[in-house]
Structures are given as structure tokens and as C-alpha cells.
Amino acid sequence: MKPYRRRCLTRAAVLGALVGILPVQTRAASPRMLVVTATAGYRNPSIPISESVLAVLAERSGAFTLDYAQTEADLARTMTPEGLKKIE
Image (cartoon, rainbow, N blue to C red; front, side, top):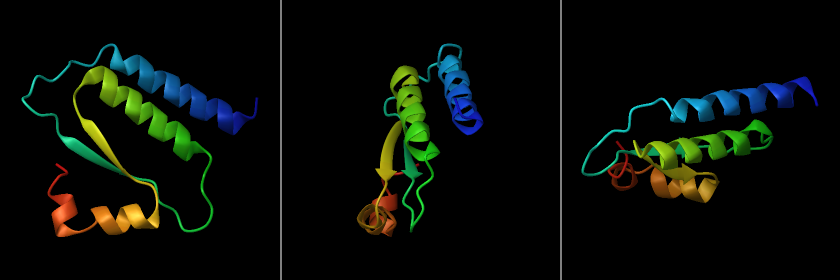
């Protein structure tokens, strides 16, 4: 396994393990977090891993929900005053 991939998978495993020890927030509505992974050109191979880890953390902890901006169209939609009102 390549060292870079091993580091990414190790970080993902550590973050995933944290889900089990993090306290679950009890709120009426979980805050929304915007994950911006849109790129112009080179797309780092760690981006899908990061998105997956964040999705698992959000699902298991219930502490937050996610909205993604993965493309230029997503950025145009979310990076407006109206679009950002949904994000905490």
C-alpha cells in the first residue's frame, strides 16, 4: 500500500473511532455544515475519503448534518446569502 493512501486510511480510521467516544448532542435540529470540495483542475484522491469520513461522523454522532458543494454549480447555488442561511 502506498504511504499516502495508508496515511489517509489511518486518519479515516482514527476519525471513525472518535465517533464512538464523542458525546451525542441533543438538539431539536442539528446544525448544517457545508463541505466544499469543488476544485478547478486537479482533484486530490483524498477528497472522496474525507467526504466519506465526514458523512459517517455526521450519521453516527447525530451532531450535525452535511451539505456538499462538489461542483461549480453547487458553489453557485450555495455561496449566496440565501444559500448560506441554511448553514450554521
